Image (tube, rainbow, N blue to C red; front, side, top):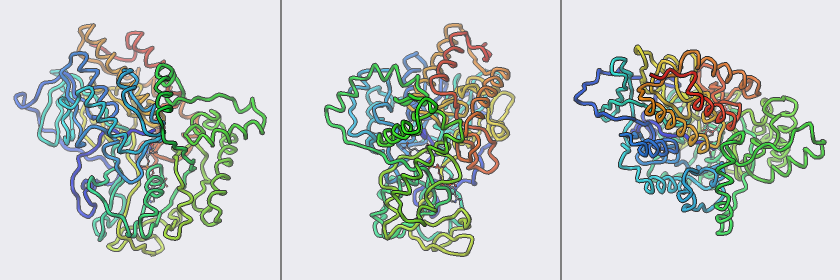
Length: 571
Ligand code: NAP
């Protein structure tokens, strides 16, 4: 489901393998911009941050429009999230055939997937295929991190700066930086004292990491931690998992595809192109039954049937009521808990690994393969750290509040991201009158449909808060729609002979109110997780993702375009 877009430049740091140098925990890294010299700046129509799913397609569209455009990415190649996340076990949990571009039938059909949920390496190959096919690389600057950008009120253009010293003078500044690309790496006191390597999952070294026979500790049991744990358990000598909040785990059914399967999904290209943008989460499946219309036996039969499907369908397309009705959510939660208990068997493991204090679907639901069974291995130890938290990292391992030290050779931090905002607030983006996006979003996270921010003219955004692409979507569906909307807006300006588009304060306020009203009706808004920004101390609370549905979001954003962009000032 996820796309983590582009991210920070890959630098070596002390004691964390080839990870970037640690950054202050949860706090933005900003740099003061020097004034641009006209002579040094390369003049462009558009600069795009990112060469992942959104950035590649945005680049293609703007080039087709005849714009002089450059994409800039901190990664060493195309792929965004699928370039950065090379940790053991990284794979899709969207069905591969829905995680493709649908704008070009040949581009879609000339690529064949080997299985329903392929791994990172195959996904990255697909992105390379797209970039080559569309000849995108010649307009991408890799290994280049945008450190900041400033809007110039006089020229009505952006100055964009990079850590390689390049300066761009551009009319449009478009962010395709991903919603999960600012990793939380510097989590614990004493990280630099550890004798072995510490890896954050999204900064996994590109060279081979030998975990065989090592004592490995994993902190974090979100979707990423789960993939790592189930993958490395039988390779390492000893695996210690530090569990703070367990997840509702759903088994993945991941068959290999033969030629018949591939032909069958390719034959449905038109159907998928029509359907995906209009469902609740941009997946193929959608809600089919209302809870109240079924008897208890029928509900159970339906839950069993969908559970056996081995996908995110149980979460995203079983019963819409799980997002709004605490009693119904509890019934479905109990259904999943019982499945987990049956698999775990051991009462201590059940106690540690079966969630009880939040409802199914209010956190991002992970798919897994034998994740729970892994804890029954002799070399795997689950350590509860909710009441006895990790306090520091020492030279020999991880120390907990009660003084226990777990001795380790390697530490893996699957500790997540500053989601939605971090990719942009870690840069220094300055809008009208020098206002800072880091400061604005540090007070209150606002946007106009996740596509623009008041005070930041000609800054057009994807995968930022207040759109489904911030968290609750099959990312390719949502990112295609957002980049197409941005291209449409630029086309509109061109046709009207205008230079500038900016969300008005009133337009943005109206969207924020609609977003909040929709979000606050859900149980997600009542549950701590990165969906609410609560994994970062001091981050303003707001449900990051638009929860009105992907189809509804599309309808609303297209209506704005069709009506001549009310809520935007165009001049
Ligand atoms: P995450 O869901 O934010 O999980 C972070 C984990 O680290 C949580 O278990 C958290 O515990 C734990 N943690 C953080 N600080 C800790 C501390 N001080 N002590 C102990 N535990 C600590 O991050 P993620 O697993 O990287 O996943 C992020 C998102 O990436 C997913 O939700 C998903 O959208 C995406 N993703 C997608 C795929 C895919 O599509 N296939 C795969 C992986 C990830 P608490 O919950 O208690 O804070």
